[in-house]
Image (cartoon, rainbow, N blue to C red; front, side, top):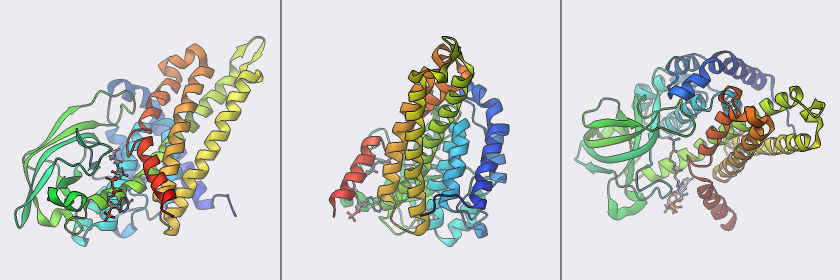
Length: 380
Ligand code: CAA
């Protein structure tokens, strides 16, 4: 078994690390404070190939593997989890969803622009009364022959106010349960499609989260993804990959907080020595380093499963469940190691602690990951 990264993987990781330090870091506190979307930085990430990492170059993507994707996600998330969630949703929910299940026309029309960062994508599954219970979609898509009419509300949509292309999950035939659900491509500016106010969030404040309203929105039939009734499976298959993205985001948040705490502990003096020389701090650092390494192995295993063509429902859920817990625990300890300074914005760890929480909630709460894992382990 070989745990080493290839030359190419190391180059990609270093490019993401450089970009995060030189481009994301300078404005990250201000974007968090003002809830400002990193519009120009998204463009730059597109130019670097970060918006379509795994997409085939024939559709404008970088043609890299899932291992490269998680390496990039980890580095971006060490510095700015708001930027990395935009990358994650665009890559693993929107681009992947279209590349794996879209028609050639859909790929030419939308994927080519999403993969280069010219367009930003959003994934619209959650509703006011259908978050974890995703089969209970209230948004309807009425079949009118050559088009559908969509009515309903979507909640907590990442990049909701900034996206150009929205993948919208809606119920076409309630009697058929999850087999009556479809997924549609809806373009920004379509009549009857309105973006509600921006959410004022605890963390990932630089990302743009909105409620969306659909009032008699007409969507041509060619914008349905897959066969009639494929929408729920489309969402589940897509979310399995999305969970690899969020697991690597959680890993990056944890690793970023750990690196800051380690550095601080070597500089800060108390009781006549650097605080890292006190076992109370050194043992915290040992726990953090161990848990981060364990999370990294789970994240890499899930990415490897995807690259090998193995089923990754279980490994992605395990990676997300564990890495998000490590993100929460590590950031709390990083604040503790910083003492009073940890509570002050300029030291960054309080922001990372606020950002960590969402990784236990979106793309399936920790409890949802346990449902997925337990169903998998019990089925044999
Ligand atoms: N791949 C393929 N098919 C799958 C699947 C998968 N990974 N998971 C389930 N299915 C299929 C099942 O086989 C079943 O099909 P059949 O009846 O034909 O066998 C069908 O889907 C229904 O499955 P379940 O009976 O397991 O469905 P359930 O109602 O029990 O729900 C669940 C399962 C795992 C709880 C699911 O509802 C779920 O994942 N919920 C969480 C939703 C979620 O993650 N939301 C996040 C929103 S997106 C987001 O956060 C993006 C963002 O902006 C950051």
